[in-house]
Image 1 (cartoon, rainbow over the protein chains, first blue to last red):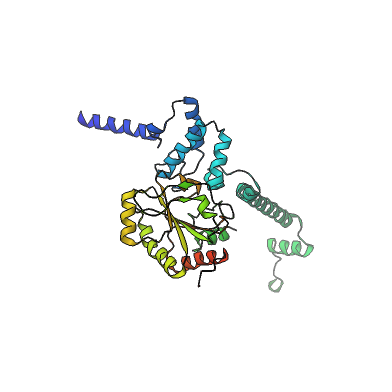
Image 2: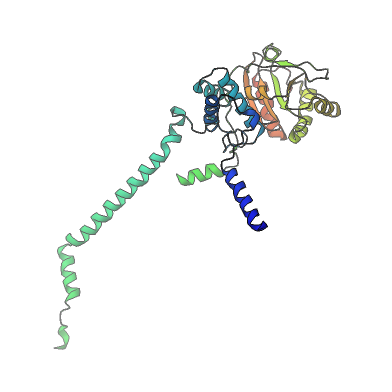
Length: 162
Length: 172
């Protein structure tokens, strides 16, 4: 029975940790609307220490500072865009997990499509060429080749031995 | 093309953790920090940077930061031998420990701002300590160094930035 209970406890803990966020109780705003906005912003902001994590899930000290800061700005009446602008002014576009589409980031956003087009184009060209080569072999035998082919398929009887 | 990416990715000059700073060529951010409580060193504000005292280093440090201890020797030498003015920002530190740290190791900082909540750190866009900025006489940030200034290359880089910001005191 204790074994079963242990498994159950572990399962509950696991289930809880899946949705766990780094947001601590003292950070949460009383206004649920503001809090929801803060959470939505947090998931879009990169933790500058851990880098591949949003500040919503990061336990780093600076992530917590930024979460609190975002809530302060929202409480002070800032729009979401103003909060993002505040962060970008200090940490650059790098702080956004979804970088904006602008001249500096064209390469970043468009490179995958360019690579796909290049690769796709290469495949199409290759297939077309292969197709042409195959057709040419069937239809375009020269007269000499045809004679040689017939010679191979129907060997003439050797003359020396009649 | 893929090979090019691989070479770029593996190149030893590339720092995958490097974050571009938006502060370069911008005025230093607005901040006003009190002195470290109990220390006889003045605090630090943005107005001190724009006071026209020539280029300065602004160094974020903390007594709990191991790399800062290694860097401390370099900073001390820069003030002693090159006459560089260094302003410190004591980042998320305990006043007692910061004071003890600087008493034990010596204080290379002309001014120290006490940034317990780390707000000045956010204003400067730092991701950790130590981090060092070169600020010219007009209060414009001209260079950023992430991590400790260690080794001849890093020191040369910072000195070069100071020279370019026109510091007549830099001997070489």
